[in-house]
Image (cartoon, rainbow, N blue to C red; front, side, top):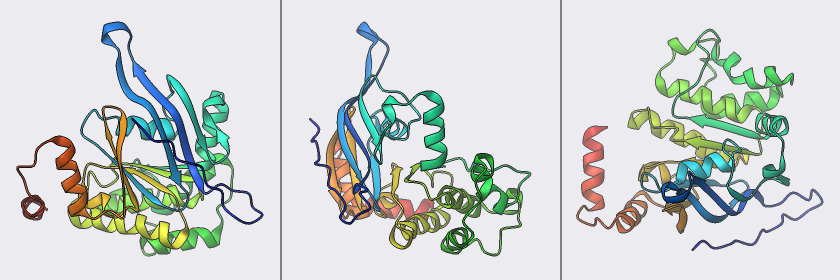
Length: 274
């Protein structure tokens, strides 16, 4: 059973909610009759503005489906979702496309950079397509935050995997979106490059006030977040604040029912394969 969370309001005259995205009774099912599969089962969740939230769970738990629904990339069977004050479940296709373009950033496991464009051109591409001029001061801040100052004229083939993912992070940040969604953003990187990218995501929250939601299977990646949501069988079964890699790993073992492996053994093995 999931728990509804009250929607707090930010103070001041701006009127913005302290919640960047929220879902109410969200259900996503595939098929019908005996073949019906419920990927999300009446999920209620709030994503706090200016925080880093990780979503975890075993394969088939619904974690990627939840992220895709929150981001407006997948439709619902029932329920409601808001990004900021906009209920995206009521939008028509063109309106939803515009909202994703203007208010949502994405970072995927694949870098999705255009090989014929240099790093700066890839970063500003979504704004160029939208006919918007980048805010130069903000763009400079983003480039400095992700450490790309000396690589802006390089094409993707001239960058390492970690540097390419930094370009993808900068691209997501540059448009100043309401929220950024990351689907296993360090999945194709070695541990050092992954740690660099996660560090930049953490800094974007701490220094730039960004809101990030990241799906991951890695306890170390989850430890960079402010909060970890655990899914099982399409439901949120736990909500951990101030996670550490060890606590996340222990919780994962509890949910899997396999407590034969200690955190020390896991991290020792991870170190050997990094």
